[in-house]
Amino acid sequence: MLKESDCIGEMEIPEDVYYGIQSERARNNFDISGTTINDLPDFVQAIAEIKKAAALANARIGKLDSHVADAVCKAADEIIAGKHAGMFPIDVFQGGGSTSTNMNVNEVIAKRANELLTGHKGYDAVHPNTHVNCGQSTNDVIPTAIGITCHRYAKKLRPSLALLTETLQKKSEEFKNVVKASRTCLQDAVPITLGQEFGGYHAFAARHLALLDEMLAQPLELPLGATASGTGFGTFEGYMEKVFVSLEEITEIQVRQKANLFDGLQQGDEYIRMSAYLKSLATGLGKIATDLRIMSSGPRCGFAEIRLPAVQPGSSIMPGKVNPVMPELINQICYQICGNDMAITMAVEGGELDLNVWEPVIIKNLTEEFRLLTGGMQKFAELCIAGIEADEERCRTYAEQTMANATAASALLDYPKGTEIAQRAVAEGKTVKEIVREMQVFSESEIEELFDPLMMADWRRSSKVMSNKNMKAKQ
Image 1 (cartoon, rainbow, N blue to C red):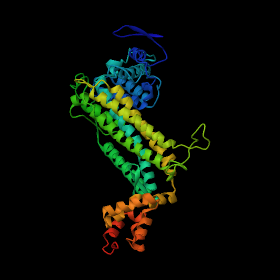
Image 2 (image 1 turned 180 degrees about the vertical axis):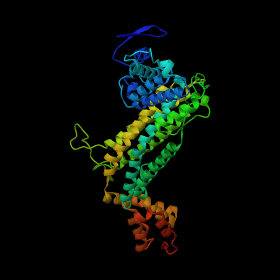
Image 3 (image 1 turned 135 degrees about the vertical axis):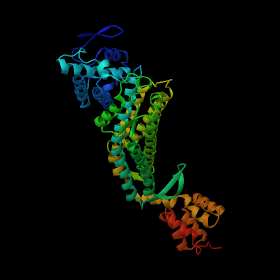
Image 4 (image 1 turned 90 degrees about the horizontal axis):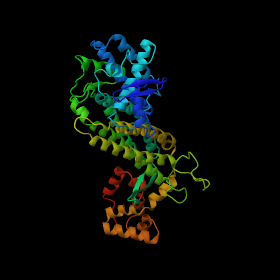
């Protein structure tokens, strides 16, 4: 064991670790959830990239000796490459506005850099605060790291969303001639095609893909350089300009400093916007998942309009039962993301005066939202939507039986007459088409044209038919 000291006192630290006394105190204080900074490797990578950028900038302005800066950069590179992955044991839930997280990375880099220079761990050549944290504060490092992390997660999200969008488009085309009854308030409504329903789903996904592309195309505005309260106190001349040049080279992300650094530390509206986008995407997907569960209900006692791919047995007691597990997965992802979004909203609103100290819960929940949607959408597209089949015969039967087909008669005759037709159809257990035929209000050719479900589902065709002056009801 090695003894280390800080302003509170001394502690023994295991010799085989790179973190130090502040990390060890935090590890003991916040051992709550079982989820640690180790579980957020992209976030740790972003902090290490910031440390490297700061070291390069401070070396270029003469604040850090070149050999110290070089060692810091090498140690940071090791973390960026995924080495030392077990050296960040602090719980994601922590007090102090993420100071523990920042110091955890500072200590690991300092000890490893010291080892590279001297052959032993320690802080005699490289100090976590003096050298690794030079020109920085937790208060500007952490929001900068969150911005970089979320940008990368957004890029990882895109392929999954693009796959889902493409899969929905293919299904829309595949089902374009599968006519069925639409349902409003879960009651029978006018005919629609299954392709039109999937076309609506595709439009939703495509819209969110376009919104994501717009976000990714914007330069990433970061508060690095604000230091503790937005004044930039503690930086040295030339640092501000050079650190962003270095950061852009290291991250390969287009970055620029926030126009107002006080705003950058006080507010978290960018977290709200990002989470709101993810919640919007999740809730729309949840709605689609619910639709698929309803349309696939059965196989004998439900709607049974579509068949979902069977991916696993569904019951421990009922043989042969298969459940819509992939849509159910999406529903649960939606519920979780809505909860995460509320936590983020409260954390952003809860900031006081010159700093929001609730960023630990923000990064934990934002990254979880991204991960859930990225994995969930890919599974949803591949294991569910791509393999959906339609029961065309059942769908058409529903389209022909819906009482809402009386809308055609109502439009050409009058609403009371349409109501009479619908009521008779219900009372006599017949279709609207059969009642109209019995009432002899249209010719047979007119009936076949008027009550064609595919015609009703196409406004271009239906508007022409309904406007045809030769289509007159018999008096």
